[in-house]
Structure formats: structure tokens, C-alpha cells
Image 1 (cartoon, rainbow, N blue to C red):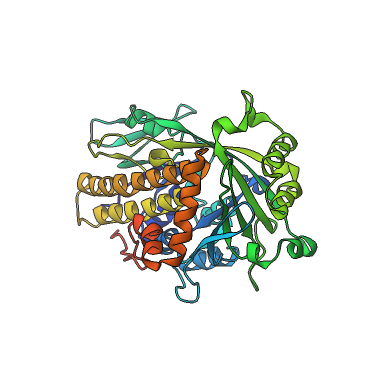
Image 2 (tube, rainbow, N blue to C red):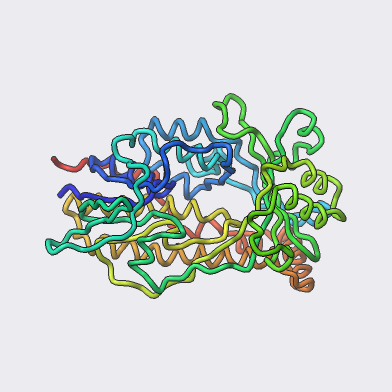
Length: 429
């Protein structure tokens, strides 16, 4: 049974699912509301971790995986927690790329990765084709309705259409996306030799979380080409984001329309008493790169009856970005759902069982990730001085006690480990 799989949304999750199905001989159809032309100028760095890397390796053809590796920036050594005066609290090492050729960090441009994932799917993706809803047919199929008034029938519809998902709103009308109460201002410091020398190698080889005793937190991460790598899709830069409770930003209604200069001036006032390097990084950001970053989160809905319509990624489990789990969770969704749908086509399981198995697993790890991301966001944005000082003390203690360190930072165990060599069973024709 060669399933007709319709995918609403050509984001990272939807395209990765399409590759997984295509690799087994299926012909998915992807409907993307946006145009074919991608705007790389407004792209930003995303962090594909070990779980996301395994999922991509399981779904992509070998040549596309090779290109993904070539276009990835240098992997960070890990993440260091420091005070606002850059005093060390603790360090969490990342997987060593030399120890694992697949399961390690791959920083990459989000738009660049999306452009790469579109390769090989030219006959699969329809642009300017927004899915507005769906209906079930009398012959037990599903019809996707498009904004232009047309429709298309399939066996399965996957909502991969982001946090404003039209599919989720119809399938799960009680599922809610709420303001997390946390916001941020982000910017990029473009790198040349003089800027690199001023920043120094420590901060350009790792991610860093700055936790002052009071006030806002600050995260920064490098985006640099490793030796011998292909040209990156973004200029080399150091990305930073100032994070705090939404009320701390003192922004007027419509704050997202504030100019980069206004946002940068606000950020400079917040860090002016911090270490000179941090203040200089905020000051050195290109004004056109400085943007407001509202953070939203999904509330877990009650379990629903599995059927021919399902969801993945932000369409179901939108989360704050501070743990970098959102995009990686979507990639894991794609790998696991793809394998279930392939098993249906091979006659190994029926469709309702396959969708139900995927959704039961996804609800568990997906909303565990949502909760962890929200906890981390609230912790780093908190204005509770006692709580912040206590958290810094715990980090210092964990830095000296390996068992406590491991217990606190078992991030990789949140998501199911995707087998990077999933069976690529062809579908009989």
C-alpha cells in the first residue's frame, strides 16, 4: 500500500519527513504557504544537537547529509555558565565530533538548512499553497483544503505548519499556545580579525550563558566556518540574546515594531554595569540585526483519538528556544513518524495503530521538552534575587561534583534516540 501522504508546511520538520518517505519510495506532497524564494539575509543560527543530527542522518540521502555537514558551522566545545563579570560557574561539554561522526552538534543557518532540505524535492513541494483545513471523505480518506479554493485527497495529512497551525486549530481546537512571560532582544556581532582578537578564543569556541545575580540573563554563541568547510550561508558572527521577564523590557504596545537602534540602546542600558566585553558586544552588534524575540509555549492538550490527520514540530509542541530543543524535537518527530508511515506502506501495521504509536510517544517526549524549555526560560529570566543566587551556587557545586553535574544536565535523554541507520525499506510497486 503506497500511502499518499500530504504535508502542510515546508519547514525543517515537514521537509525532513518528506525525505524520509521519499527514501523508501513513497511520493509525499508538501504544501508551503510561502514563496519559493528564500530570504537568507534575515536568517539566524540554529543548533542541531546529537538527537537532531541522528534524525537527519536517518532521513536524508547520503549526498544531502554530506552537504549538511559541509554547510554546518564549527561545533562548539559546549556551554559555559558564567556571572555577569565572566566568572566561571560550570561547563557542560558537547559530544566530541571525533568520537561520534553523526551524534554531535551542527550549528547551521536555519534558512540555509531549509534551502538544503528543499534539494531533491522540487517535484514534491508546491509553494504559495497554504493549507487552510481538512475534511474526511466517505471513502475513509482525507482532503486538504487550500487557500486558493482547490483541494487534494490523500491517505494521511500531516500538520507541519508551525505554531499558528491551521491543522492543529481544526484537529485540536482546545490546544492553546500562550505567551511564556519571557522575552528577549537578539543581535549579531559580525566577525573580522580585529573583532576576533578583541573577543578572544574562549568565547568563540563555546556557547555561553551569563547569569547575573539580578536582572536579565544573556546568551551568546559563535557561528564560524570550520577549517576546510564550504562557505557558510550566513556571515561569520557571534550571536547574542538578552533574556528577561516580559515586564522588564518596559516596551510599549507594538514593541516588535521598534527599530534595531531602539532595541540595542535598551539592551546597552541593561548591561552597562556588566563586564566590559559583554557591554562591548551589545554595542558592536549590527543595528539591522537587532530584533525583539517574543517567546511562546504550548500547553499540553488531552490525548486525542488517532486518525488520518496528525501533527509534528511547532504545530503541536511549540516551545521556548533557550534549550535549543524545538527544532531538534521536530526532526525527531519526522524520523519517527516517517518510519511508522513506511511500516504502514509495507503492511507491517495498520494506519491507526501507526499514528497512535507515534502520537503517544511524541506527546510524552514533546511536552517533556516543552516543560523543560519553559523551566529553563523562567529560571534564567527570573527577577528573584534569592533564587538566582541559589541557582548560581548550585552550578558552582555541580561543577565540583560529577554525579550532580550529570544529573542536572541529562539533556540528551529527553528525546528518544533515533537510530541513525534506520532501515530504508523500499515500497513495493
